Length: 516
Image (cartoon, rainbow, N blue to C red):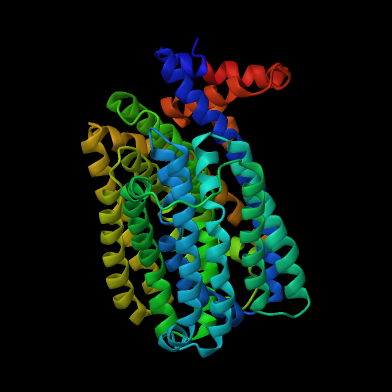
């Protein structure tokens, strides 16, 4: 009988790594599910209270703030996780540098808001940028406790910060402000509130010596990793904003709003699961950065597991994009369904890219991650400039191509440094093909049988049908539809469930069937 992670006997420290990763994934995965439900509901409400033009204004403001965020964070949290020997003086240096850069970023963005708005051809965005600039200093207060929480693998706290901050920021403050007619400002209030809640929660939950220091050696220790990571974040932010910059400059605000909302829908799964991946895997990978064999095994299992999850989700979003946009956005959102479908085609690559980056950073090669982001930026910027001639769909195709090229380059480098054959990685990525075909059959069947039904009904039946049929085929032919990595993931998750849940007779029969 196969019993989860014991399928291939490993040394005890490998079991501890799997346990750490899975326990962290359970906490952060549960919070991701809750956050997804909240985002779907809140997203649908805000889309009906605000216009595409108002979303477009905030999207232009976020182009600026998202770019500066990479510089303002300086990779401080990740540097604290990656350091093998972390001393109190290094923690103090991290706190000092993060606050200093946060304050400078706030001041710089505030003062430059007028010329930036003029450059983006959106003078009305100036006060929005000024208001958002305060979030840099607010977030800087949370960077050290975030890093220490990740290092200490406090996954429950990391999951809680996402759910609580989003609920208060967008669910309460944002929706209330939009209902009261605040327009674009409701989204600004939501973002400032969310950043404030995260800072308060983390600062009150993680104890550390919050004093300043000018110790040069300590600051150098942080800058060594943090600067490379921060540079990578800046390049990643540039790449992720390049398409929106092009759309913002060359197309009217309503189209900017349509593009930003469609992009957010398409990237929801990758962003949510990606944050779980980064919060769990980077600390775990850093702990075995000197053991290439274990790191390679952990990497392939992570890629296989995320493929089993994300590929069917990607297929679902592509085929159900019309229904998804109808439910989340309503009418008057133009090409949003087509944009969602195009962008969803690379969901698996966006999610798996986080795993690859986590491995490279754990190996101390943050500058290599920066080089990959530079490639992504060049491809995205060039492609968007060409694609904008064909409208929003042209930009979407260009961005999708850039994601694929960056991912191919990243897995080549990752395979080289941890000595994994590319053929093995390719087989791992294709493991989800059978389960994805089941998803296709279910969605096509629903569209044929319920072609006259409302989008809400179609989407609900599609989701239920895909879930139930997926469970059924996995039980009947687990080796075909889950493959070894999927069976490993199921077995490991099952072994971490409370005994009161595992002793359920139905679940016991299902697990016995899958693990046999």
